[in-house]
Amino acid sequence: MTIWQEMLAENIHLVGARGRLDQSLNSQLEQTLTELLTAGHTRLVVDLSEATYINSGGLRCLVSAWRQARQQGGNLALCGLNQRLQEIFSMVGFDKVFQIYPTRNAALKKVET
Amino acid sequence: MGKKQVLTVAGRYDKVKKICEFVAEGARQAGLNEDAVFHVELCCDEASTNIIEHAYGAENVGQITISYQASEERFTITLHDNGRTFNPEEVPPPPPLPDSIDGLAPPEPSELFFDNLQIGGLGVHFIRSLMDEVHFDFSKQHGNTLTMVKYISSEAQP
Image 1 (cartoon, rainbow over the protein chains, first blue to last red):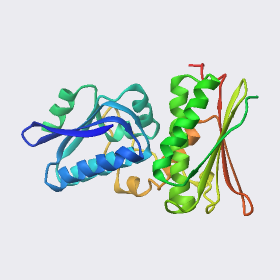
Image 2: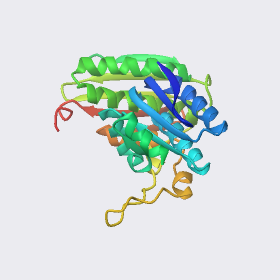
Image 3: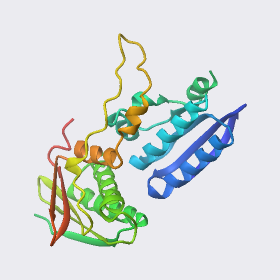
Image 4: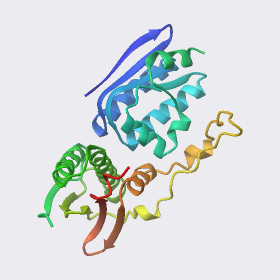
């Protein structure tokens, strides 16, 4: 279980979650996103293709980062959600809040614009 | 009716995974499919987190006792704590999101939407949506007991 990051393109950062987004991993995700946003990196793609689980804490963490990115003139898109994660996002309407794409490249194009 | 299985842990966040694994194993043995096991795990996660955050108000304040029992048709989970009353039935559902109009993209949620996303509300919404029955009991003598039931016969339905 880990959170990883890399630079996708100029000033676009990719953050990925591997494993269960639960109490133990959510704090790492929050810290990583907060550090990027605080450093002014506001164009973010969060890759959840290797995330097997998410709870409400994980959702709140993503919503908080998305809001902060938008307030700073940036954007945050998600990609790679499996069917179970899609179900959780839909259940609380967050599939309407977030821009969710099947692939990393599609999400990248969205945050570039 | 299967034998009741019981686990008691300290009310700490690092114990939530243990609770989830304990119940998930029982749910698999009871015949729930992996989607239903995922739902059960998530609901136990949310319920345990709410106990620590709201009933106890902090970690290491009290214990959480979780039990499950399976019959042919029902997988019943109870979570018990001795903290303050936290009645999930009193938590309002998440506020509605703006709908799209005439095929246009929906407007972004307002500040009010996020302000109204009550703490604990998302977790309670998951519990209400994913479990077939949810009951809450409180007594000053015996504390809080949340009972959640997943129908085994219904989980195979589309």
